[in-house]
Amino acid sequence: MAHFIAVSKRPSSILPFLLPSWSESTVSIQQRNQSSYRRTTQRLRLKPDSSFGLSTDQIYDHIIHNPPSSAPSVYHTPTKFLPPGDVRSTLRAGTSVPNSEALPTLFKSDTTKKYHLKQSDIEEIRRLRLSDPMSWSRWKLAKRFECSPLFIAMVCEASPEKKEIQKKVLEAVQSRWGIKRRIAREDRQLRKETWGRE
Amino acid sequence: MKRLQLQQWSGSALSPRARPACGRLLYAGLRRQTTVSSTTTDAAPAADAGVATSRQLAQAPVLAASSQMSRRLLPSPPVEAARESAKLAALHARLYLPSRFPLETLARTLVHASADPNADFNNQSLATLGDDLLAYYATEHLLCTYPRLPLTVVFAAMYAYVGKKTLAAMAREWGVELAAAPGGEVDPGLLQFHRITPGTSLNTGPITGTTRPNDDRTSWRRGMTSRVVYDDHFGEPTMAPGATQQSTSNITPTVTAEEASATFVRAIMGAIYLHAGRPAAKRFFSQHFLSRHLNISELFNFSQPARDLSRLCAREGFESPVAKIISETGRKSRHPVFVVGIFSGKDKLGEGAGSSLLEARSRAAVAALKGWYLYSPLDVRVPSSMEEDGAAPWKPVYIDPGEVVV
Image 1 (cartoon, rainbow over the protein chains, first blue to last red):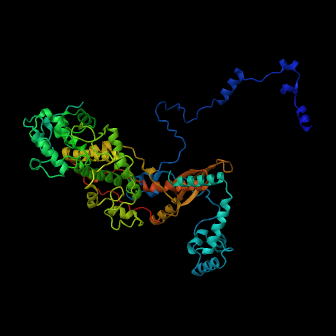
Image 2: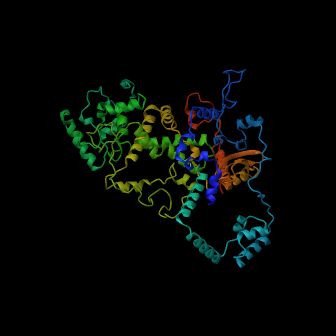
Image 3: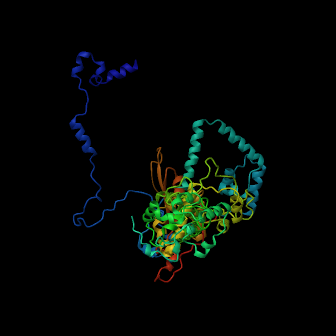
């Protein structure tokens, strides 16, 4: 019923099937004629970029170099990587370097190393992880000692029981995956391997 | 076809009996090799039994009318058959070989050791020389042009320049056709070798009998640095000479078409060096080998590029690398694109684009590492350029401390 009300609000001219058959000749059927086609092409006709045009003072006296945006070539050695005796470092000395200070970093947290942990702290990390591996995971230890989980993995290793439990948990999770999820995860891993190759 | 000027051929390489103008070319000299001195050929070097019998038969006073019959008894075409082959002359002209390079030697380069075990008539010695020359020229080009390349990439690039597959492809591009089976009656313009039996497995487990110590311990790791010391120029283990002789003594050796074609190309290189000298050999190498395009930046494969770059900056005393977002679009859409640059201090080391921040950072680190490893000096000179007349005094090439070891 609500559907009928909604339909009846519209003007009947755009819904020709609601009208009786004798009024069919009066309904204007929308079609593309030449004027609308011309309007469409006129809108699609973009002006070329200003760098393509010839300047008035230098006609045919310069090379138009307008390359598409692309990654810089790996054969172009960065200035910092040039050895001391290379001529290119002096040649590039005058070129302006874009300010990298203003650019945002990749991650919000600061990843610079602090080197603040002492030997006693490391002993404490090892003791905690061995004594109660379920509550003291790598992430919790990293948060408490303000270091990275990678550092926790470097200084200590999980007990074999904890590894066994974790393996079973992983198997239980993976057993619930269907074929699509499994394939998608394998594809993601394969794509990740191409990062270092291309 | 290119005209062959017979009088310009070097007399030192061509023995007088092999010259077509010489009247005393009889069957006694049927198997005289051009590159062997006359005293050696007269002594008739002892080979295995089959060849010895064929030579005795060939030295029998038969007339030229039955030459086709006696040729069938030879393992490879006789020397003077090279003059009659149109294929050989065409190949000589097509490769634009120097005129001092005789057709007889070209015919000899087409005979693999599996077809004719006699070392005076097969291309084994020429191929050994040519292999060393190819390895030397390719190595000096790689090490002087890209002095910072890691060892794995050097090995891969060497294989791409002068490896077996490349040489076989070159022989195919040169239009060298393969003989179905070797024999004395075969056209000497065809590559002659004993084909391996179809269905033979080429990967026969771990290789033993190499020159490496403890090669029976198959589970031991073959490190990259040990490959420089023990292995060949592709980082593959070389077979000890005693082991190969034992395996080939009782049965007829058979090779793949790829191996035979590669041996032919190596033999051509060695023969050019012998007949036309070092400049011609080097010109041949630059025209046929260095002219093949090889994109070295595609040979890299990094597993942990960000860590490697961090270690590199620590080793060289640069500020530690920091990844920063240069530009991005569609962060919350299905297809975002991030452009991440890796900066050390104020200098940009590399730049990469990816559909996630981690991918873009990883690609940027890869670009920075490739920028380090693919450094090339401006005026590259190789040591063999000192052999030219009037060469400028030698300046030492740039040598790098080595790749990043994590």
